[in-house]
Image (tube, rainbow, N blue to C red; front, side, top):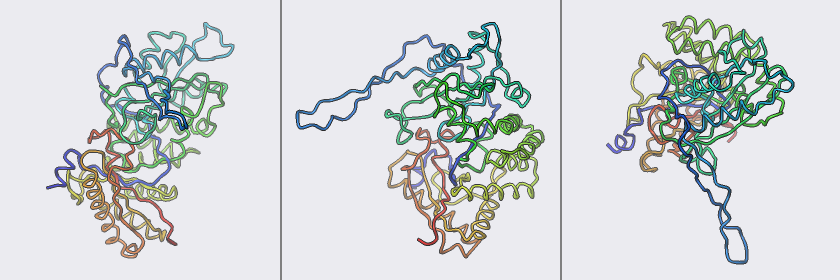
Length: 432
């Protein structure tokens, strides 16, 4: 009864995670309500630092005020700044430059969301209306061959100190423009927006993907936006992966439109590229085979996904618990839990790996109850692994972390923060 109360609208989502980085792209779900036209006045949040250490009477030192715009204002301001200040060198003013967008992602989960999709569409709308010198085209291998301008962007929930920890109170919006002819970042802008009216739920491909991890291709995308400034050479590893990026994006778009055969073909082509060994591709192959009812291929895909994640040292797989429950429901059309657990236990056993099964919750409810629930779910998953592979009994431990390690931190207890209700598989040293 207490579990039911504290987990009231968790939707029973749990995750299992294996670290390093996930980059996934595309979407076709309905666009959220239109963004603001940017005519209302911005709000200002003033953040003050702690008093400076001194032998004299303490004085309060204020940091500069942080301007937090409405969401529509932030998008409008960032897009106009990005295109107005683009340094295109000696390009004639009359020359039109082709622009493609590598879909924006959540800066923490690396997923595309309803919000990032809507922002991408708004960027296209604003460029066509206000910046006629630029010609927006869909991301594809054909367009990349023409060395266009490329836009990347992240949209990140942060707290008042600008960090992705604790309860989030605003969004940070980063946009960067890369000239693929010169290989340089030619424009960069950052804005902050309020949280009201933002739909942050993941789009279908990212919602359905069983695996989550921070893999190198995704991190290179994020670095291109967040760790660059105008004039810098763009991240070389990201640029080299663009052929794969385009194929993955086409596959994701097909998946989100329920064109699963087409999605499978795109992911198989991406797998053959130099940058094809990545989580986005492995998730795409798994999901496409699963939707097409190809169970043997699906199980093989999941095994490759687990191998990839274990090589990174950290695995995340989606488990859907019922609200307040600490026991997994039977397999469903969306999630074959028994297959996932069998494959994970087999791979861990073959590797003679030692693991921590770490449970997590979102921020709703008293923390002691959150910790108890996360511990029970982690122990339930551990018992499944040991049942499948008894030799793991002395090499796998279960720990509950409650809400102390939230990744999203929105506190919405719905699809938007489902990653906060995860279970992590963390590789440990067996010597300890």
